[in-house]
Image (tube, rainbow, N blue to C red):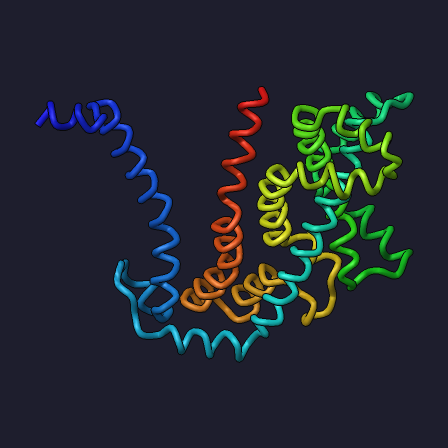
Length: 280
């Protein structure tokens, strides 16, 4: 048996590692599984028992939810806000990183350090200033109040700049300039495609962060029909009492796009990490 295992490239150490990884995977999957299972039970069953088996109250929980809140309007709001914020944040971040990485100008290092210092400021601390600013601009209770601040992401600039410096030689930029290509054309047609793996990996985390944003929409939105999904799920818990089955169903619906996005772009994350390792 030991000889057969060795011929297959398996050793005792590898078997232990595989078992540990399998155990960790199961521990990560169990909460999601229980969330889906509990969304099929009523409140009394969830509060009194612990079960791994599905129930028969999924339709009842869904009908109860849609009678209290417009869950799919919140879903559409989250898709629009998270999608728009992600696209703007990645493009503006890549364009800013391009300026820091490939242009030489006075005060560049100091300005970049100041940009990094803004990452130390908690977003909740800046929320008061953002509220006053958008109040004077008349943008409160509008999608722009959420999307515009999300477009200015210092971490995206830092991440893309590091990737750009290691993956895009200056000679490529100089060749485009010699061929009379403008800076925007050089960026859009040459630099941006090369940044594909980094942008794909960063886009997942940006989308998830925007999707899970709870406090900012709660403060800057006043209309119920503009609330994103996380806020509506919280309203289910707060306004209508503690209905666990309804709450689990709302959470299950809210994380579905995150799982889909991660499943689609997970290979890009691995590719960007491998590319960074090779370049390093």
